[in-house]
Image (cartoon, rainbow, N blue to C red; front, side):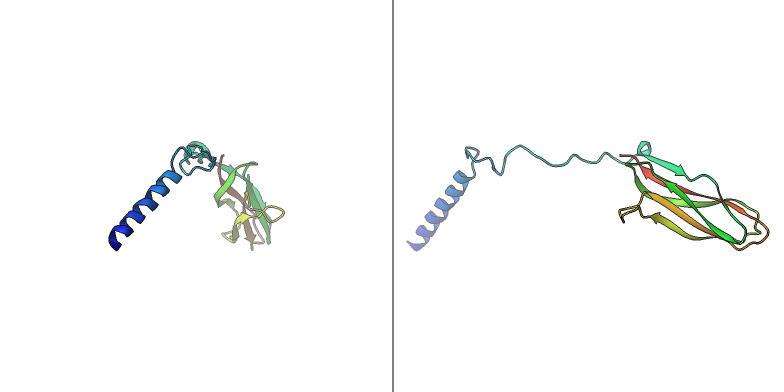
Length: 137
């Protein structure tokens, strides 16, 4: 008898849950409502959305240092970058000292790729550049 009472009570509780969660509920917060206010999906990353931005040539003077900076256009995301030595008249005494993302003013995420070079030569200069890889929205 006790088992029959438990089975009936369980069945009644299950039926109440089904009725309470049915589609006939007048409340706007239905669990199975078809409306979604999710943000739209990001478009796929493909070659059309990627492009390179070049800093143009920068001269590293005798016994000095210089920075080349490539800046992504407004609204684009910096993915990475690279640094190049175009012309070296220093007998290979120019060196890349530091490279990476440069933070924007105010400490927000950067949109510029910076390459810092040093020239230890006293007889020649070097032409260097930075290149940023940017993602269009």
